[in-house]
Structure formats: C-alpha cells, structure tokens
Image (cartoon, rainbow, N blue to C red; front, side, top):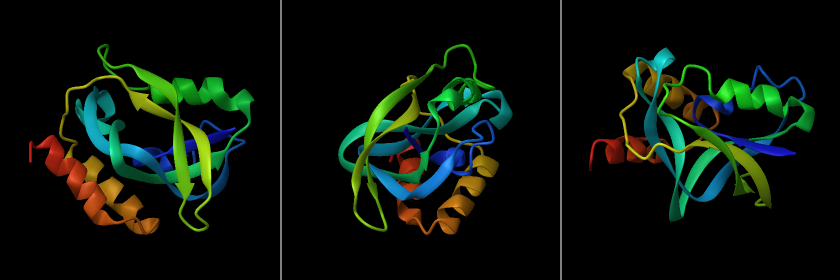
Length: 149
C-alpha cells in the first residue's frame, strides 16, 4: 500500500516498521493548510490537506505493509483535542523525480477552521521543505492563507 505523508509526518514514520521510502511527491488538487488543535503544539494548528483544484501539496511517498495501518491510524490521533478528527482518504500523487502518477492513502483532519501553527512547528516544517528541496513559497502560501491573506 502507498502512503503519502506531508507536514511533520514526512520523516520516516516511527510507528511503521515496514515503511519504505519511495520518493518525493506532490498531491494534486490539494492545498496545504493549517488547522486543528494539538496538545503537543500548544493547541495551535498543524498541517492538513484541503481540496483545492489546480493546487498541490508536497510530501513523501512511502510503501507500507497493511499490517502497520492500525499503528499508523493511532499515531495520527496522538495529542488531538476532542473536536478534531483524522481520517484516511485516497489522494492522487505525482512522483517528482520521474513524473509517475499514483494513487495513495493519506491522513487529513476534518476540522475546517484554520489555525496558525506555532513558530516552532513552522520552523521544523521549513527544515523539512529544505531537506527535500520543496519550494518554500508553497509553505509560506499556506501560512498566509491561515492569516487571511
């Protein structure tokens, strides 16, 4: 099974021993957004996807064994407040290095209200964008949308 990760989940998932790195990718028709509330991040927003035609969100594609799904599902809910709900959903992704288009699963939150991330969260996300050579303007665009611009 293919799993598309974005936000701070781009690092190899510690709850998924079978995860195998496939490559850098982007989810089509999805914009990066900050929403929700997580106790680990001072009850501030964290990364999610929002359907947005002709937009894309950068992330990492992994191959995982379905036996690891229960642990991955649980890991996505750690630290969430009661109003937040995380669901697994299909997404179309394109591998950056070879242009292959694939279907994958990803996790998104269902809360609609935008919420700005903490400076620490955003800084860590910037480091990951640098590490994987993703365009920083895609990240700053999500932050500006959260601020209402």
